[in-house]
Amino acid sequence: MKSSRALSFLAVVTLSAGIAAATPASPVVVLDPGHGGSNPGTRGQGLHEKQLTLTIANLVAAKLRASGVTVELTRTDDRTLTLRQRVAFADKLPADLFVSIHANASPTRTQRGYETFVLTARGVDIDGRALRSDTTTPRPGVDPDIALVLDDVERGASQWEAADLASRMQRSLRDRRGKEGDRGVRQDAHHVLLGATMPAVLVEVGFLDHPIEGKELADAAVQQQIANAIAEAISEQLAD
Ligand SMILES: [Zn+2]
Image (cartoon, rainbow, N blue to C red; front, side, top):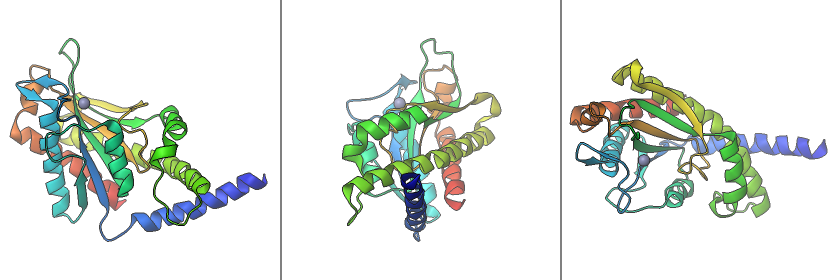
């Protein structure tokens, strides 16, 4: 009893500290263009996933920066990054939101549409146990054991916000790309998101290997349309 009350007190302290830290003049968003360098990702229409994700991320960044949001990209050129490096980059800033951008492929090349992933509770659990030792948020002056508890508490709260951001992402994409492509919000122990201490989602913008959708994704106007949708979802989430 005593320890659980102590823990909820700790949670209140952390959450209010988190809110104070998360509302500076300019929120920080990390965009993660999927793949890069020696890891090209999927391919279609002469376009590699790593190129498409960087193009879209740059368009999203431009849009958000124009409205006063601070945006950092995990990569701004064609370089190889591990999944761990991407999340560690966001944790270190620390970022308020983390959005990883990818494109899909299917074995039969017949699937199409967009979907947004959040971590499952199980993924969060694995995350907490496996990754806590080297992804702890820097907390000057805080006892390392308490810092681990604070990280876990924040991660729990982040899950709710990630789910919100994911449904906004789908709604915003639906408005621009049509409801028939809406594959919904998916839960997965997604390795890309493991270790993120802020709300984190992974958006699959479409199937690059689909004969029709692949062509659309290679079109600059469609890329801008998708970027606008992602930027709008992020802006709404930050304003909430
Ligand atoms: Zn990918």
